[in-house]
Picture (cartoon, rainbow, N blue to C red):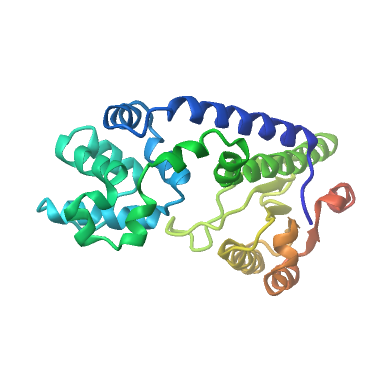
Length: 289
C-alpha cells in the first residue's frame, strides 16, 4: 500500500528542519515595509512562503493580484502565479507598494477595505500573531510539509523505477537482449501520436521488440491512472495490429491503485502480465528467449 524507505525519511526530516530554520531567518523582518520588500526581492519563493505562513491560498492571492492589475488599467486573459507576480513586482514599484500594503496595512487601507471582504483581507496581514508563528517549529513544519510531498513522492517513485530498471538490465545482460528506454511507439505511423512506453526489450535476431513494459506507482488516486489505463489499452491494440507476437508487461503498485479498482482491473485485462514490486523478480521467468 505504501512505499517505506528509511533513508528517504531521514533525508526529509533533515530537509524539513533546514527549511524551518531558513524560513525563520529569512522572514524575521517581514512585518515592516523595508523588511518585506527586501525579502520579496531576495528570494524566488518569497511570495509562496508568505502565503504558506499566512495560510492564504494561491487562488485567493491570484484573484487579489488580478484586481490590482485591473485597477492599474492592465488588460489580460490569464492570471499570474506567484512567480510571475514577483517578476512584475521587481520591475514595478507601484505594484510592489500595493502588494506590501496588502500584507502590512490590510483593513487599515481604505481602498483595500472597500474592495475585499474583511474576513479575507484580515488573513493577508502580517501581524504579531503571524510573526509568532515563525518561533513555533511545529506550526511551520505543519505548513511546509505539503511543500515536500511532491518531491518526497518523486524520490520514492525514482527508487521504485530503479528497481525495475536494474531488474530489466540484469535480465537483458544475462540473455543478451537489448533494452530500450522510452522507445518510440507510433500507432498511426505518421509521427502525430505516440504511446508512452517505459521499456522495450528486443531480441537481436528478431525485427520487432518481444516485450514492452510500462509502470505506475501511486499512493493517491489521480486522473493520471485513467490515462495510464487508456495508454495500456492503446498499446494492446497497437501490438495486436502491428506486433502480435510481443507481450505487454505492466508494473503497478501503491495504495492509489488499490483505491482505483476500476482502472486497476481494466489495466490488468488489457496487458499480458501485471506485477507489483513484491513480485518484480517474476520478470526473470516472464522474459525469455
